[in-house]
Image (cartoon, rainbow, N blue to C red; front, side):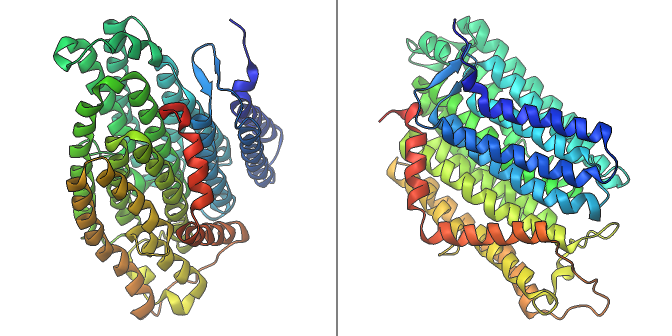
Length: 481
């Protein structure tokens, strides 16, 4: 079999910059930390350029393990966007919170895992990519080494992530035992003659275990219990990167696996995911209502948004998958922006994550307050923001594909979520700041992240057409023309 290395060109660029940044760290001093950050960002930009360069070429595969098709290359851009924003946040985090310079290397390694996961067309490649991603995230979560919350979060994530990996591995083993192949296309060929789950109990059990493993990774009920503690304890830049990039990678891989390997059971897994969507968005929103910590509230919000996203996976078809990809882009922008504001509010030993810390922010830091209000409105799904159109497309896809009841439940949940999002905005605009409130400083890289995500959130809310056309082209390898 001929080996075409251009299939892995974006991934190879990221790997090369992992080695370069490690080399700089080994030979440099503390002053090399900033250089490492900018080198990591350069690697992300070059990998994005490579993904765009190969866009539109005939789909190629590397040894039947990963594919360089439009779907995988578009997913690369989502992951690289999250990584680039996290690296810019990291330029400030290593100074303000004394994070080690290795965070830049770990972000690149996690991004490499995401990119391989989004392109994997073999279950072995899926597992290896997921472990590359997960191990890097475990270390990133505990990277604030003199902060007990970070260390506790890292340990919890490691233990529960290990359980998720075990479920996934068991599922892969069962699928191989039932079909004799790890290839997604091979699994589809072997299962095409089956009409019901009862005809292949081992294959069905493998699919269930596979869904459980991914449900852990993207925080779907009832496998979401790790999320609030881990998101709250991890450094804010890690939480932003994890909640956007890792969630996107999980959903991108899940869509490819279900659509490529199990299209004949679309009705069965569609209804199962629909029920999970209801439980996930309802639990996330109800749990967020009573939170006093903005960071923990955003963690529960992340669970709720995973419920909205899985609606698109459940309804499947072109409309469903397109709505998922659009939602992932919008969610990355508005969620990373919100966590950038959270990071700007904190400093070493004083995370300043409570609602009271945001009271009267409009009089202390007007630009930051306006940006945070915009992100809260977008997450709530208020019109003229990217969050509104993201929800609209997902809910519309559910109606078009015969899941109107699911869209109705989602709309009710969106209304409920508006309370805790708007509560933050109300505190910032109408509350009186404490006399002892700490001054808020925003560095240039952090300010750029906030400004870029805010502008993009508004832009996609009023002019999404180019991105939607791009997404329609990206999903053709999965659903055809």
